[in-house]
Length: 322
Image (cartoon, rainbow, N blue to C red; front, top):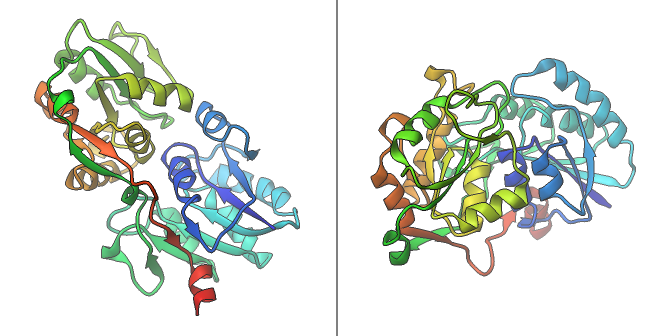
């Protein structure tokens, strides 16, 4: 039998890509349902993928469109389990999967430190779905805590990094459609050395007036390799971006987008930045407060991964254990 892995692109897909390798009680072969982007094509190269209509947060029209895609994909009788990390694309897939009595697991994003997202609240209303939070603080009768995607990483001092100058920088603002982050670009142009070689991944941020060459999106492998070679990574506080930096040993400078500036739908990025700052995995700072010292602090750390990542026990594994 086959497990269907469902996620929006960006951080949701990156989390699921990490977590599906750690799931105890859910086995492959795996099939993916996500959006068609440079990230998904690069990250999932060689995998079985169904590309479905793009759905942004709170996009009820395209949630409805994905009902048709979900219905078509779930006709495959080899599918017996659906796992999702959100966001809105999870609702039609899990809803229809439960009608077909498939086993369903919904893992709330690590971005949600103090309670479920709107998608999480909607999915929690579907009978029979196993629900997981990545934060012990808000686990309860409906939501089980089985660990976090961030548990695969730790940080340590990097004296070599702290002693070098800032020559090569990766700046990644994510690809959230309809939301720019010019506030960070403007600050970085004041902070970064004029001679620094900077790769700008800018998404929907209009950089036409800044005199820099921005790339809307960069394939996953290319962006990861650029991060590996960079002296420092400066990024919006997205989970996917943070994970990409961790994978190559970088402690990123994470700058949260803020609702009050129209940079995102809410302030969940402040929660991500705070959580990763407390874990010592990132330097967290607001765009208006970013300084050269934050770059130096990030370069003075490196992120490591254990030889074996901790497992993520699902309800299916717990039931078998008795």
